[in-house]
Image: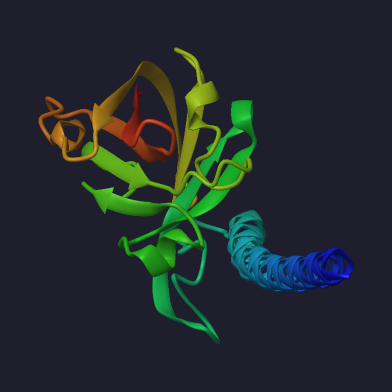
Length: 217
């Protein structure tokens, strides 16, 4: 009789343990699903916001192209330099950067901030487009072929076109490509011997360094 009772107790405990384990599995499953849904919502929210920024950049470039087409003299200001967005403060555009080899065609924002970098490449340091000195332009590396993500694909002698607000186009040729530590800003040096130079900068998300592209006329 005692053996039967012991067997019953063991059976009851085993059944109870299985039930508890089943409940734990369900809790873990539904918790995992909840966090997965939250992550997906966050991902699509980021993509939606980035898409809006990309469309704004395209709109500015289109405005530049149309204005340049109908301008009648070299002193014509090719685009309205002030832009604003419902979620961003007003910013100014000083030109266009075009790199045919890697499909880049973006406005250049006059000053740099995290907010502006989400829209388009920004002037980090140096003169206005196509003036004497080393114009340094920084852009985000999103690892998705947007922004400056494809800079690392540039080769020596590839061309970079810079348009000023007057519509003037200057062609720069890549002569150097390298990486620096995140605290190394030697590439912004303005000693160009009275010539025009261009420096493009973006982050290398894998090595925590910066990719630098140097170009000259």
